[in-house]
Length: 120
Image (tube, rainbow, N blue to C red; front, top):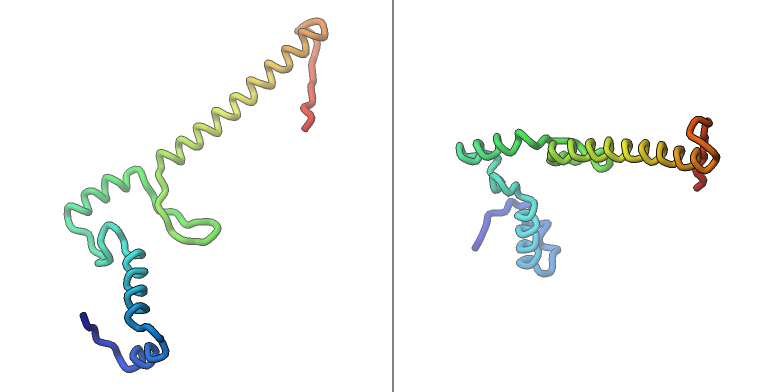
C-alpha cells in the first residue's frame, strides 16, 4: 500500500525511525476515533437516518461540564435518576417521621412535640 504525501509531511516523517510502524499506529488510532455510525463519512444513509431519528427520540446531545466534550445522554436514564432522587427524598422524609414517632412514644406520647437531631 502506498499513499501520497506532500513535501512537508515527507520532511516530518524523515525524523521518525520506524515510519511504517508510526504510520500504521496513526491510522489505527484515527480509525478508533471514527464515528461508528457513518464510519467517518459524515453522511448517514436513508436507513441510518431512520434508525438515528428513533434513537434520538430518547437521547440528546449535551456538553460535559468538566471537559466540554459533546456526548449522548439517555433521556430515560436522566428521568430515572430524577425519579430516584425524588424517591430518596421521600424515603428520608418518611424515616424522619418514623424516628420522631418512635422518640415520642419512648418519651410518653405522640401528643408531645418531638425534635431529634441526628449526629454524624
